[in-house]
Image (cartoon, rainbow, N blue to C red; front, side, top):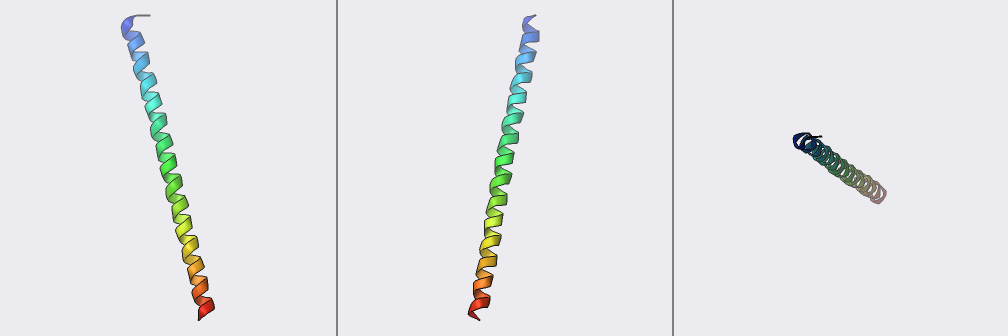
Length: 55
């Protein structure tokens, strides 16, 4: 295996790792956003119910 071939392999491995990291970060971001959104919706529904009970 020549030096340049090994270099190409290293580069492709690094790129793959970077892609995995990006995918993980995106997944975490999407998860936190959806969880936050659900919590807001739940809170809104709860406050709506308490309002209806009061009036």
